[in-house]
Amino acid sequence: MALSTKQENVDMWYFAWLLGLPLAAIFAVVNAMWLEMQEDRAMMNGSHEDTGRAR
Image 1 (tube, rainbow, N blue to C red):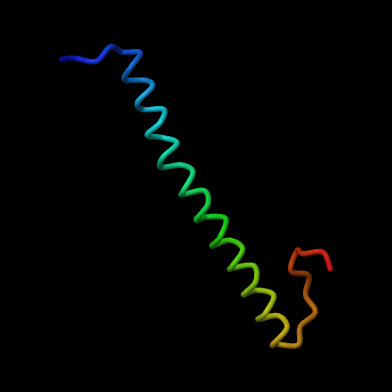
Image 2: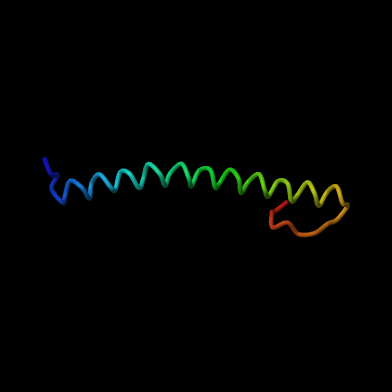
């Protein structure tokens, strides 16, 4: 039984959200970890470079 075009569009919309939300969350976590590593590296090197974060 073939689905209507409207039903297929609804299914694809949910599929996009199911993939998009976890990927966005993973990206945010990895980005935060990278920023923390940059700050720690600057502290270990004794550098007072601007890491882009307010103090």
